[in-house]
Amino acid sequence: MNTHRSARLALAGALAALTAGVAGLTYAATADSESATVSAAQQPIVVAVPPPPSRADETTSSAADATTAQEQGLVYITTTVDYGRAEAAGTGMVLTSDGEILTNHHVVEGATSIRVQVVTTGETYSAEVVGYDATHDVAVLQLQNASGLTTADLDRSGTVAVGDEIVTVGNAHGDGGAASAASGMVTALDESITVQDEQTGSGRQLSGLIQVDADVVAGDSGGALRDADGDVIGMTTAASNGAPEVTGYAIPIEQALDIADQITSGQTSATITIGSTGFLGLQLDERGGVPIVAGTIEGSPAADLGIAQGSTITGIDGETVTTARQLSSAIAAHAAGDDVNITWLDAAGASHTATTQLTAGPID
Image (tube, rainbow, N blue to C red):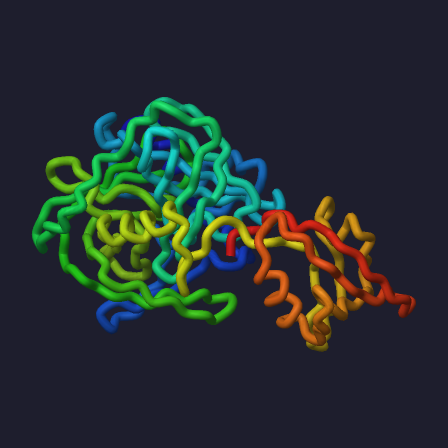
């Protein structure tokens, strides 16, 4: 076992201990009528900032360090979550030489800023979200000021068969360093799983997936599922936990690219969102249903307007709002950069009206 892999395994226990309490990152899946916890590729690793130095609680894995060829076209994605309180780590693949990146939606969900590192060169870029499809777990990013990147070798033919040898390549445990390569074979095609957010109870079904028996772990999300020729045939997305053998799942690359093509061409749909949604920066106390302000995000439009704790939002763009849900829907209908008119009552009951420009919010 080489030093890259040893470092990755040593961090695994410390990182896992810090995942609790971050919305949207704990899931459960049901595949083939057998229930299992999904904690591998399905969720990005979430770590405190700065990352903990502990090397206790080592785990074992059958994965090895990837070769340079297997790392071609691969990137590591690190997102700032909850305005700097934590970070999440995942993987992505380079689609174009100027920096379009394919990854899972759940890798960037909740992100307020995104950094991307090219695995083979170590070059790091800031990134923006071009668009995403939360329903099918696909997102496209654009690196800032990137050029001359090596793209991933993608096989859109769809000629995948049960028994084919494969290797999954990704940012196992989110520690960076050499990519992890986990070998296995295709065990089933056109599989469906139900992913459930254990904190909110909301469920999401993914279908048409490639099932593999490779040792996929957290942080591999958005990484490459390669065939015996080294071509990318899928994007690693989920894996089971709680059973003796790991079962991994990947979105077929032709399915992911079809969605990516719609995103890059600017085609919105019932499931595709282009760009960033607008963000006001309010923290609401929803216990009574009324949109009462519990606080604001520092530097946000709401904070700049002087909206303070104890205020009640009463209108958006001249339309009355009486519930937190109405307020959220009214803001979500706007894109970042839109001007909105806000009416509110302060804690003393005085009415205020002002117009502000929304900023880019966390990825929904």
